[in-house]
Amino acid sequence: MNKVFNYSILFMIMCFFFTSCKSKKGLFGKKKEKGKANHFSFYNDSISTPIQYDYLSFKIQSKFDGESINSPVKSVKANIKIYKDSVIWASVTALLGIEAARVLVKNDSIFLLNRLNSTYTYGPISSFVKQLPSETSIGLMVQILLGKPILPKDQINETMLSSNADTVKIKHSFTDGPSSNSKYIYTSKFTKTAPYLLNQNLMDSVKSHYLNVNYSDFKSINIKNKQHTIPFKQDFKIYNGSLITILNTYSKMNTDKQTFNFKVPKNYQRIVY
Image (cartoon, rainbow, N blue to C red; front, side, top):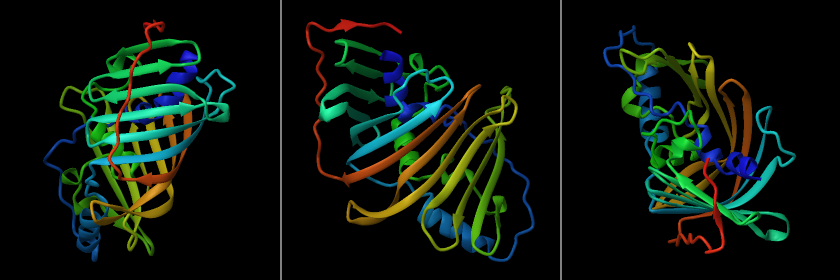
């Protein structure tokens, strides 16, 4: 159950092992195409700006599969609560609504409570997901789950945009510093009129690793007196030697103030990973 538990809960973490990359400055300019400046302004103003929130809570169903997940369990339901850029709390339910596990994620650590076998564990996030860079933040994780770009808007410029009749694409290649042995290619797509991403992809072309996210089922949510269009479905494909697919479906999202209860019962045994 412990390995299954890790895969089912860490869907918020596993898919971000590329996300600490920083692009290099000094890109070569290209001749501007008609309409590019307007598309770039729309991207900056309506798509790439992070969603400001204090609290978020929602229910989620995650369906996952992959050759590295050796378990008959392929779906979990959870209640998720988030405090701005600092805490993600999750309660995972089993059959009949019984809590099977509880998770508390901070920017530097994760705590896992397994109620099915009375065990718990904690440690740096990187000790559970080896590919995850230590500097990856909760704030970035949440923004990607809300349909915001992996790369911040100050790393995108209008020379990276191309368009057809309905959609605009972004493509950007970069390395993670001068000594990096990886080369990253970022792509994303959005329509010319709708304020959300349809998909985004980040690939390490040297190691052949990638993260692909497709967004759908968009709903309008009021957060801090501002309407935001949020994808209530995200289809993740993560390849890091083997393919993992994760389909998240949200429901009952709200911005009410939350509490984050996490206490280890005295009779629970600690498991070290």
